[in-house]
Image 1 (cartoon, one colour):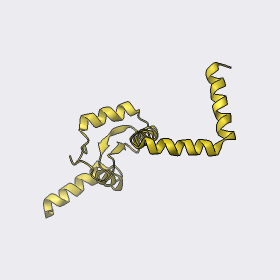
Image 2 (image 1 turned 45 degrees about the vertical axis):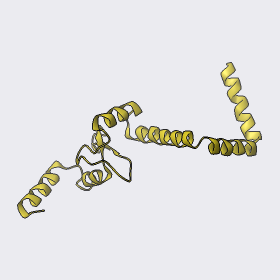
Image 3 (image 1 turned 120 degrees about the vertical axis):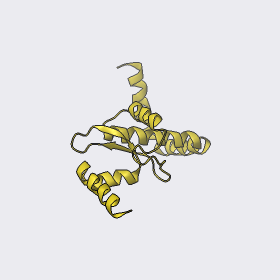
Image 4 (image 1 turned 90 degrees about the horizontal axis):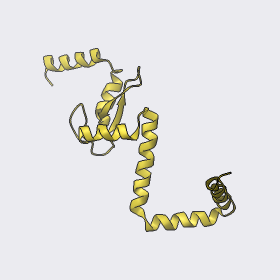
Length: 128
């Protein structure tokens, strides 16, 4: 067993034996470091979201920098929700970052460019 593993085992044992102390420490730490807590939570959610989407956090951050935080379809910056990670449902391949509204439109059209093209023609022919 390496020293790191031994130390980790000791930490796990302490947490198991003293759950109330650990809980009190975490609560105290969170009260003293609200900005760090928010950032850790944001980063944790981002890592989990990227993992589910099959991309790395670095890929996400490059795409975010490239788009400037704006939707790659409508060009608007999402106000209430975080920008969505878009992927092809058939291929699973990452396509880009889009707002929730455009993501919903793609989903409701089954990612069909034919349906979206017909929708666009319908609006062009009959007025929007």
